[in-house]
Image (spheres, rainbow, N blue to C red):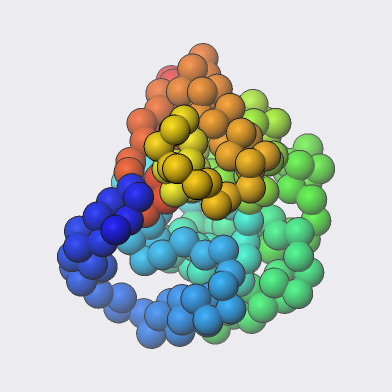
Length: 215
């Protein structure tokens, strides 16, 4: 049984979400086969809905992997431009190929390097920022990400429930890295108390936090 959402409910939601894009389905299968840190289709659909809702034209993503979540984001609008950061050069190369196959190469900039350093070089404002990078860097990146958002923009963060391990005593035998867990727990506290943001958490898959920058 799923720690966040019961398996039966997850299967029901997955059944409702019919992928119209065979490329996304192919990338998802590759990610599962290679145990890559990809979101799933339910979170992808959430990203696209939120990006569409705010009319996002400038989107920043931390953690490209092989481009799966980026395709969901950049596909929200023909006017959307995505800047996405990936520390692994080989994954970035594959992501560029996938963006090209998706017809998005002219609207996606893949930045290779340490996101914490790269963030100092990018200019906002962004309409949507998706944080799905190194969990230990979540807390230290938060203030910079908030600064890069436009008023009314969204900061969306994946893995904030960490398979339930951020809840003290909930998991009898934790399986996740303890330092990652501590970093996410700290991030959650800071995110929900951040003076520039209003935040809610959706218990979908591994937990998705959605924060809007105050106007």
